[in-house]
Length: 399
Image 1 (cartoon, rainbow, N blue to C red):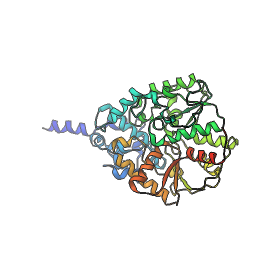
Image 2: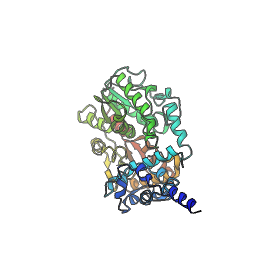
Image 3: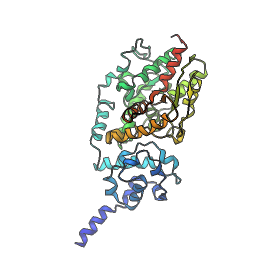
Image 4: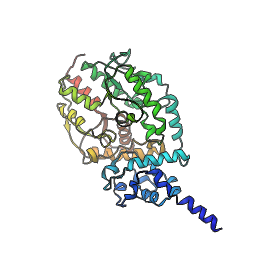
């Protein structure tokens, strides 16, 4: 009987668990201050707060941690990590918990593995025929040459991403961006069905080992069209290419730019005239673009150049911005949590008196729109490239 109890204790108190989750042992330096829990946008829905989870990991309470849903509700927004006084890699630790859970096949949310399998099989997150990646362009009155029939070669490649390619609510983002580029006489191309998911959704779902094939394929296709510069309207794709792809493929000689940086450069070079847009707006910093990639100024520079715009910052902005709730594949685990976070964020936007909350991420637009609808907040979500196109059209730019 005593041996049985000892065996049970050795299963529950797994001292190797910490090393598996945090090989650098940074979690051992946790002082239990609770900063991570206080700043976590989804802590209200977790069964254990982040602070509690790290204490449990340190104690070796593997089963209790793995059977919680805390780490599956992490949006990987990095809000906790930028504030941690010990500099602990909290976001990476949450992803490591997902990896461990997937590896051990314990407590993986229903649909998560099917989600990963769909990306591996169909090369996109929606499970659609990947040959239909240009479907968003079908109702454009005029298709720029870089879209269809697309240029075979160009130094500027627009990498569109899965959400903008297949989710109708945000088709207006790539539609707007290609029109702006054409009006600025940018010679660009797209990959069509040769573009595959960047792999970032797999990375944050604990399936990063399945990302390599996608990365190698995308880099090969970019080199095939002669790309010297790749532009992204999707911050997640941008982050994946700029920060994760070097582990899998040679990206030397290729410059990565988010669309806001690209637009700021175009406007600074007076490639486009801007007309008035008489609206009150605020700006939401996407987590993958802001805290993870430290791009804060470019979008604000673009907004500052649009005549007639009344721009008002939210109280929580830049590195302190609240997550929209759309990251971390949380929608698969619990959609209501995602939209609850979005509701909190659009309420902050509405408090500024703005009619529009502007972002520079298609996922943020989707989530903020739904958060406003679900929570009955009277503010509209729009992407920055859509706003720029409005301004460009107001100025009467000719193709």
